Length: 302
Image (cartoon, rainbow, N blue to C red; front, side, top):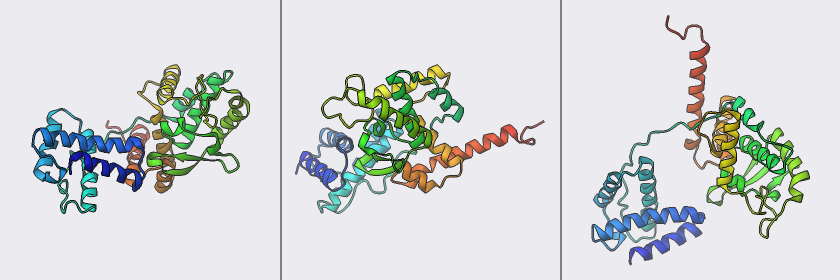
């Protein structure tokens, strides 16, 4: 079979058996297409079954020469691992050519985190006398209160808010669902928003249940959310490069610093692996170290 035939079956596997979203499936297929182009045009190998370990190594070397970041190289290799794992699972091949190939060493970059004072300053910039201002305050309260991703917030439905128990039903990556608690302050602003502002908003067909809408009655975009947060940071005098995800990082970091169980934080963030959540323990340790260096009487060399 040709590369295209295998990719078509692989896509069906990702959709039906792995339940991945269209964006995730496209990302995996693009990884395979990059290898296909290299295999067909450079190696003259018209089938993925002809690829061996040396070919994968040469392909990764090409990605390095093209200047792709270590993170991009690692992600592509991860996609190829899954593709060839599926090929072996289906019995098309006995060996996975990506086995025993190490990806590039990734430098873990610590995400930017806001202090509680910076968050309060940003929240205080919104004009609560206008519907847009109240909507924006409500969105940022929820971002910090529940640690949502930008796409999770902009896709949030009114029917996903369980007011009686104070939880939000979130559709996360890979269409996985989770229940996330919403804090007291965020509930306060959300209840007023739903009771006094949301009913009078224009709602286009298909967006009748959407929680956060733009002026045209459609879902607020992630780009607009980014602009709203950048503007609030600028008005508050917060001199950090931030995005909606910064609220998520701050939410998790402040919980860990406060002594929250890491498994609970993992559940609220929707991380499939505890290893992803563990970055916040490193942030917490850095915070503790900075406190000692700043306030301990024996921390400074005389």
